[in-house]
View (cartoon, rainbow, N blue to C red):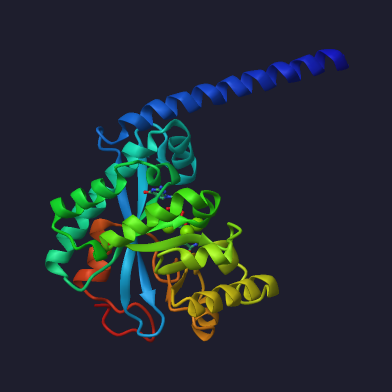
Length: 289
Ligand code: C2E
Ligand code: MG
Ligand code: MG
Ligand code: MG
């Protein structure tokens, strides 16, 4: 009986694996066609200056609405796209759409910006990246400074030799650069000092434990101090509560982003709430623009 059960288990297991493999292949194929089928869109999450309360830009976050599976989370399809190379096309769609939306918003609200776009490692390795971005900016009539690129610390630190000249070229073009998920990627400080970056983005895993977890509090303070000493802007992501916000303000973090302010919103909702009505962002806020 035990043997039979054991065998059944193995059969179950292999059936499971092939199911996953099939599902993965289907998802990969669907993803390649998602853009042309109009299943992709961007959501926008505001960033706020803790000192003035003002809106200081937004981050574009990719959304995929699958006709059968509904919203597929980026954690699932971005990694897949990075592995199979389709991130290049996907990322190009994101850049193009973000530039289009930004030029529409800037025409009406010239003070709004920058708009941040997440860039995956394989995108940074494309030989024509800098050219392509300047093409997209020119086509949209945007100043390079109105675009910020968010690049993960993990990528930058794992590809040191490769990343530095690419970041330098992007900076020379006039873009703003932020290191995303900072604190998770084993930064070498001497290398960090050489990077032409503007912003450190404290990873949300540390923010989650604020203000009570002593380790998260210590790490957050250390990142803020590091950012200040290098003359970088420090922003905290994933800020959900007022007590987290107060801790960050007290410690001198300049900007926040998170549910405490707003979830990522459709372009329409973002504009209605943060651009058109200029609704105040918080208790200490002035008009956002
Ligand atoms: P990320 O760039 O670090 O973005 C932050 C993630 O945290 C977003 O998840 C955002 O919706 C979520 N978030 C924002 N505020 C809060 C909060 O207060 N609490 C919590 N618990 N979460 C919050 P999302 O949109 O699911 O994206 C996940 C990741 O997928 C992003 O992490 C980014 O690495 C990647 N991603 C999203 N869009 C793109 C894209 O266009 N290109 C690339 N390469 N990656 C993208
Ligand atoms: Mg990001
Ligand atoms: Mg992040
Ligand atoms: Mg993150």
